[in-house]
Length: 304
Image (tube, rainbow, N blue to C red; front, side):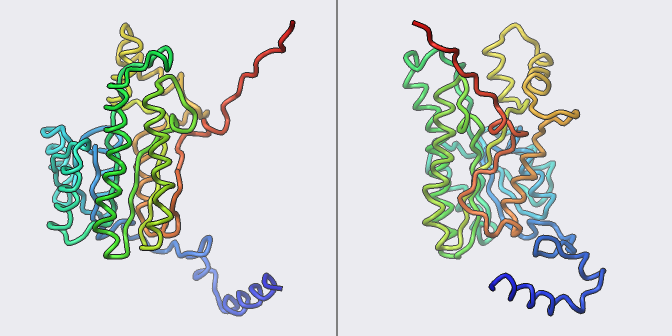
């Protein structure tokens, strides 16, 4: 009965619609606007001096946002901000220090009057893979967790501090497919699983205040940090060989499609935009189907 009633209402509303007016609708929202998707929004992006973070900052600025690039690579960060123009600025931020995260948030509010988007992207890959959990160095583990997981919680905390009073905001966190399908580096995988868990843990609380919290889990990309990590595993391989290993050997998609940093940046723009106003507590996986299509090798029959 409810469905039939909705059909009657929709027929009444659409009876006078012309093809021109219908062309602006898809899935219940208008697609007619061509304005930048983040026009007027203020964002802080950690780890924005290179790689994925740099691409996200560029895409945010291109879509009309004012962006503070927070990083520890001062020269590189300032150069990127200068290249992006007047809507970008650089602030030093070591994400293992909560006070520096708080300062980056406060800088956005002082300079622009508010914070609309907090993107917790900064992180580390850590030392090369261990042969076994039994050989894991817990000092290394603590460092990876501080940079990848604790920093995300601190970023969520301080973003919420300024977003909740305004009853509006979007918090994004970079996780990884390694947090879903663990690989050969247990500490890194644990840290990224913790990011996904943190997003799910706080999204329910913050939704009541109009603040959304989501994660993005990229598959492997030939970023500088990824290539450095692979170089530890394959010290005799050239950078070009390592790049081919990622873009060809580890590629999940056919037809010549290769995952690029811009793909992650566009996913971030969607989640940060009003197009995703009802998306909360979600982990957007950008992996070409890796985490759903990986074959599971079953052991053979056990014979006595």
